[in-house]
Image (cartoon, rainbow, N blue to C red; front, side, top):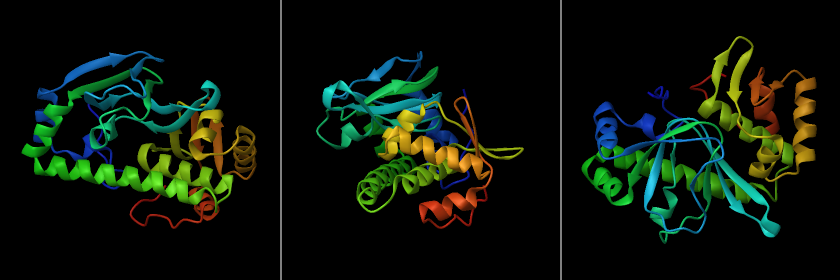
Length: 236
């Protein structure tokens, strides 16, 4: 299934490739389908390939104390997953699990390395994505001691809107295949904190929520809550 091209700054890997690069990557890959709940890879296993998501959503998670699942992130159409192990010791640092029906290109690491060596633009796009991922992870860790839960949640909703949001009649629509508890885990707050913040923002008319769906009706207050400046290149 074709993935719509980004308008530039979201940085989903597939969408940063030109048509020739996409064709070359397809040629060396295998297209696989996964059902909801299927595990694409497990934490601690030897990494042998990367995934390029063509359709659907996966969550990145790690085992916490007591066997509890700690949700670390969300990846959607156009994103690359499982790439960080290739840049470290070759062991998976997290599990990747399908949230809904997923189509993904499975690319062996050696072929992916050859692809990057042969395509300068694709290599640059890959480094850009890696740098952004490391920057996001570092930023989250640094912000937790000095920011409130509502600030981090607002920032996360802004990020989702910028990367995956689509224009709707009443605002920017985000199809979120995560529970409030999983969202709370990603931003490092309790479920109660996330629930209170979302309820307050609904009452203020900032957002509307539905099953696995959230509409940001007014983005400006979220930027103020998150203490962030809006991107001038995109209006939500």
